[in-house]
Length: 246
Image (cartoon, helix red, strand yellow):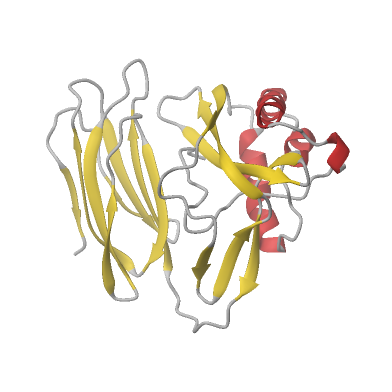
C-alpha cells in the first residue's frame, strides 16, 4: 500500500483513530512522550502498543475500521521508517468539518501533527494529535448528524510525489474542483518534496503542477472515491504537468 500523506487525515475528514486501551494514568503526559512511544511501537511492529496511543472514544465502527487499516499498514514488515517528528498544524487545517449531513469532530483537543517519514523516498504520513484530560493521544473523529440535506459528494485526493532528500523538490501549482456546483481552487505549492491534499466535492476540473527546483523529480496523482483518475510519469524538467477533465 502506498503511504504518502496524508492529511490526512483527511483534512476534510480527520481520519485518525481510537480509544486508548490503556488507562488515562498510563497514557503519555506530553507530546514528546507520545511521539517517542509511537516511534517505538512502529519500529517494534507492536500493533497493540500502537493502538493504545490512539483515542477511539466515541468512534463508529466505520471509523475504527479505517484506523485498523492504518495500524495494519504501519506494522507491515516493509513499513520501515526514517523519522517520527512533531510538527505544527497546517495553515489550512480544519478540526471540524461537515459532509453529507454529518459533522465530523475530533475527540481530543488537536494541537499538532505527528509526521512519519518512511524509508522509501517520497513516502510520509501525517496524523493529528491532541490532549484530553491531561493526557496526549493521536486524534480520533466522532460523527454527529446535522440535519442538513444529504448531497452525495466524492472524496478527492491530490498527491504530489517527489524526492524529499537530500534536497527536497519544490513545486507550484493549483487544482480546481467543483463543490455543490461551485468552483473551488486548492493551492498545490510545496517545498518539502511531496504534498497530499484531501477534500470533498463533485469532481476535479483541472490540476496543474510545475517543478521549480533544478534537481529531482515529481509525479502528480489524482483520485476520486479512492479510484485513480490520473497519474503522470516522473517529471524531471520544469514543464508543467496538466490534468483536464474530459
